[in-house]
Image (cartoon, rainbow, N blue to C red):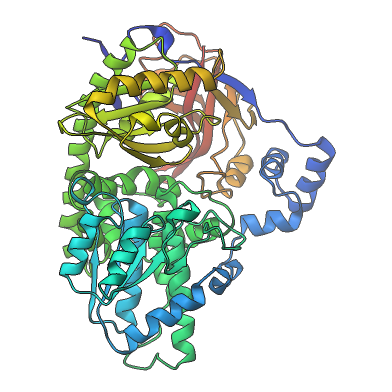
Length: 584
């Protein structure tokens, strides 16, 4: 049995061989030309380091910087630029006018859950009274529009099905619904091959025939575009009146923000606009669901993108991973705090159950990984692996070992189903599975994440094939990189730099929180509650390292990788740097 150590809030087994955990290579981002950054800094009033960060992220002129720092909803593009949006509106309007039965088919992740809640909320405000929704259960129905889902849908007798965050690959299933007299509108954002595209009205920026200029919208972002178009069309036909007032779509931006952050799409362009505005709504006019989530997760300060990604989203995902994601939809649409609180607590309990299951799976997974340490890719299998949690555990293994990792649940003797993750930017996991197709029943996914099903008798052949692909595709020496945005002085940053760094929020994919190198403080750190460390640099500046006590035992770091921010306590504000990595 391997020993355990606590890392980033989780107890995970130490690798039997210390070399399994790959140490990161620290690299500094290549700075822009000094004269360019000085000019940009002078024209915008930004700290030179902040100007350099923005220039490297593609904001090269004062106008571009101004739009980035002050996003406005008027910058959202016309939804009718999306292929088939006009056809989508023309399809939906008669069902609203005639109050015919509409069913929304969602997905069990946060993007699908928020898309479902957003569209339900709008259609109810638009007067729909024959309105239903269905979110498939992961283990019972599979993802999206499947044959198992169709049985449920047809039993509810809808006349129109609108998919959100799914459906782009369901060619056969869409045809089956249409054969039964059900109209289908697909809204999605995933990629698909031409021969799998449904023959129906389809709104998807990533459809091969769609020329929409921004392809990175989340499923919830596409749903928001649909309601933008529907509201305008209903205004044009004088649908809104005193008894049915035109809804303020700003009130739905909290859904769009939560779905966008949780789906880890690039936080730039329209995604940044939606998240920025949605966070403002959550902090100024939180709906009962947001109030309940804040209470359950003990969020005292301002809600940020980090709050959404690491506190709210895991609760909502837990329902879809273990049970029924409909619970999360009901939470989002709760009309009062009294109704929302018990639902939020129930989701929190599910998330704790998920964490406990994950801890046990990590122990088994690391034991198996140690036995395959000579392989460049890992295929791990156990009857104790839960299908709904395989992806999370695979991601943690891939991050720690820097190896593409697939976890397979073997409890079902007829098929082994699993999820894989690749922490390596140049390793396309779905294409790797394509090279192992002869050993697989089915597979799908994209570069960083994928899923597959294996017949039990093919497990060892698949493991061998995957190891071969990883050996062929990956370089002999492979080392993860830690990219830093700059160096801080020994005493840390000044308040102006911290304030301007905070203006770059919301942070996420394509706009990561800036990371800086800090020389090791001359003062010894203090130990906090046995697991955490703290350096006091001055009365107004400190460094906190959560769960770093064990890593610093007997180690003298050369420098620290930190993010910067403020901490306010009892009316006092301090500059607080958070430790992310140590360089021994």
